[in-house]
Image (cartoon, rainbow, N blue to C red; front, top):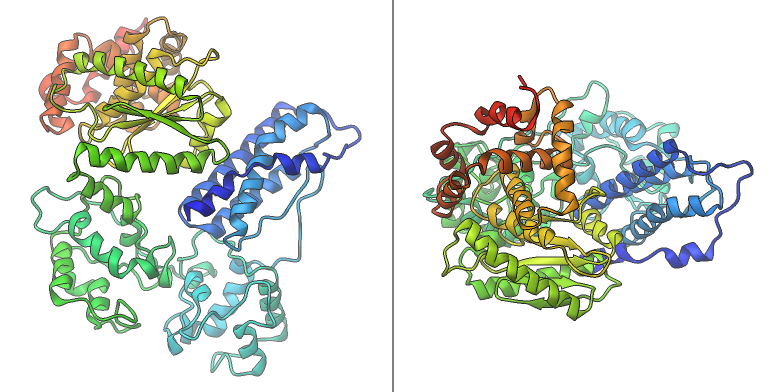
Length: 620
């Protein structure tokens, strides 16, 4: 799938050169409102990319088409200002069109100045679902008669044991239409009228698209007066280190081996997906799979034992799991169905790999991270060959020359020496086990691609770098200066952020605040640092509750500026207390316990002393 993903990154520049942007008489240059609409379209395209990475291809297509609708409504002309304004969304839409075509999801071709593509489309939610619920519900929604379920769109799309029941774009060749026209279906629930049959045909001919929010939601819930049968959001409970059976270590490998083939997508068989831990808890068309602490009542166990009243024993078409394997899953449920991974929304494969990474050596983990870094670069910039250089502490990857990357590596190693002194790190251990990756960019647009394509967000225009941490793939990003060099404060910031985040379950505000405080100490004349200092009072004056940054309730840049000020102006004054917290984290202490012991309370208890220190008047 990663090879397919790389198609997303194919440039649409050649296509833009082939067609001219038509001139509209009287059209004006983009106004502030027009540019806001363009940003809204770019946000919809980023959302499409996010859906695609989660294997939600249909939703990805809907988001891309929404972006197209936004752009088509603009008063475009063929002036250079409009061409420049539309260059990014056009390129991104071209990538989306190519990649989604490989998944049999259509995003119409469109040229600036044309109206949005339209057609006589039929809404599944508003027009098709009511027909199916009324005429087919008794046999195929409430039950799975004939081994065919319409419990939700995902199940309908999968079809029966004999195959799919509709072929998108081909109504005449679809089994559903054939059965209705022959009179064989529906049985006993009322005849499908000619108008309803025509509506079903037009829906299939138009691509059989799903226009709801969640293909795994029950069909009944889409109809006015219907009731959803999806499980409510189930809280994720973290495991205790000494739990006898743990998910990532013991259960996830079982699910990966025996269940992921059918239930691995975001909406797997019957809407039940094992793509992530939180999707497992949500369940599918038959409801939640786990009743916490009650394995005998859990649908997952019933399906594995073949005692469920609905559907086949699982894994379908394979030998039943050994009794000791099922007993292990039962024990996990009995202990509370807890989670021992890094992030409940991480893929099942990454959850397993993150747990396994703890048993690898520094060298083994470094080798894995090089492979992941190369794949990441191909994802974000497939047309730019990557070079890489490495030391024992850091891997530097980028499209710049090896000489430039080597200079960045040397600077990174120099900053690591300084960070070791600041954080008093154990000398015999690498700063980051397995090394961290530094992605280096010489163009702002290329740097922005890692936000759009990998992280599903638009990076703030003021950023010259940022970091991300998880135990499997910690990395930082650095945007080079105009002269091709890396600013020492920018490099040190990314390394410091990853290091602090690696010390356990550390709040992001503490890690990012530490990273920026380090940048300020390394290079106090950095214009970014001066800007952060100026922004603190402005941001605080706009807030009723300044402590919101502790909970991640602010926009990224606003929250990060306050995190920087809170750490540098209060927690590091004096520095000995801050270093005491770092030392406790290095010894394995939980963050909350370490913070309370050193500072005598919770972070919220220190908000007033901090705001009094950094603003001219005392804040309440």
